[in-house]
Amino acid sequence: MSSVKKPEWTPPEAGAEFASHVMSGVDDSHDGMSSTPVVALSASHRRRQLSLGDYVSGVFAGDRTILSRAITLAESNSPAHFELSQQVIKEALPKTGAAVRVGITGVPGAGKSTFIEALGCRLCERGKKVAVLAVDPSSSVSKGSILGDKTRMENLAKQKNAFIRPSPSGGTLGGLTRKSRETMLLCEAAGYDVILVETVGVGQSETTVRSMVDFFLLVVITGAGDDLQGMKKGVMELADAILVNKADGNNELKAETTKVEYDRMLHYLRQATEGWTTRAYTCSSVTGKGVDEIWDTIEQFMGVVKGSGVFGERRKQQVLSWVYTMVEDQLRQKFYRHPCVARIKERVERQVVSGELSATGAATELLRAYGLDVSD
Ligand SMILES: Nc1nc2c(ncn2[C@@H]2O[C@H](COP(=O)(O)OP(=O)(O)O)[C@@H](O)[C@H]2O)c(=O)[nH]1
Ligand SMILES: [Mg+2]
Image 1 (cartoon, rainbow, N blue to C red):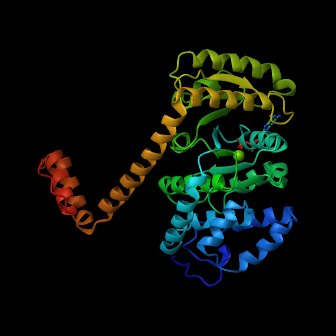
Image 2 (cartoon, rainbow, N blue to C red; image 1 turned 90 degrees about the horizontal axis):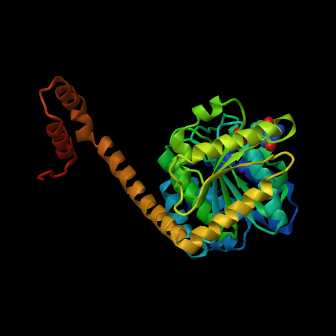
Image 3 (cartoon, rainbow, N blue to C red; image 1 turned 60 degrees about the vertical axis):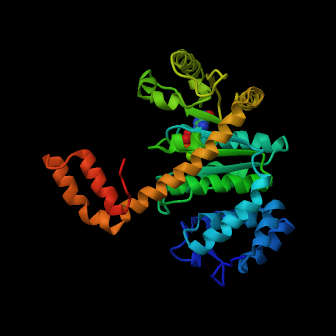
């Protein structure tokens, strides 16, 4: 068993190999909100290095502090942490897969976090264990999104059956994806039945989150018809439900109209999931009206896709595509960082642009510089 090199394990002192030390702040708030003996015991875990056995038994026992530390380990960019965390995940794997995985996207301010708080609290009341994760490629230590989510989910954060984990910050979307998927697996091994993944609608993050969840929810708000026109068709085609949020007060009627407009548009789009018709719904995350219906819809969806085999097939494809995405990311990085490739790249580009070299000739030369034999 490999061991972690750092004698004292605390993220704030851990240095640059950690993706972010914001995580420790969130862990603190979790501990501060609870006074259970588990947390008192966990305070001592914080001070010492954990073994593979400590991580695995802590995660299996649902100890939130150890779960947090296992996630931080998986998020670390240090090779020693990588080895240990891969061992933890390997042990955890047999206990993963049973949760309902839900992705939630929408423009900033649509009310995703508020909706997650409302839904999460209801699920906790029903005895479910809910984990909330975020995938935010734009987040960084200095930006406010992480803090924003924490305050939006104040009630959920107090629930003993809830676990909230902000987005790891920095790094590539590929790196972020690995971390988020592994976090999801660790949460499942810790007994969470529902995983809610919030993502902000920027760049490729929607497609990324779609590729790790069973059900994908698009949260929108009312407004003039221009909202609909501005909405990317591609994102609507990823969604298993469209939720018109903030259907309360003066906005309630308008929300109903917007819902009808979305339903009409959905009619012309490709369905996100075979055998399932995507529809629009209204809800108010503030009054709670319509929130239960969304969960009912998700449960209905799970029944349909499990019955038809679409669920199993999607999970299978997701894990395989995850493998090859990681392989391709590594290969691409290795190629572009190779000194021989870097040395000739500019000259080859210049020649191909000026017409001295064909595109195929240029690619062949670059691949040969990398050491690949491109004979066919
Ligand atoms: N009236 C009303 N306001 C809401 C509702 N949901 C969210 N909000 C408000 O909309 C703002 C943005 O919410 P937030 O959950 O942070 O959006 P996010 O960026 O999509 O996560 C906040 O001021 C919320 O209080 C709702 O259902 N009704
Ligand atoms: Mg949010």
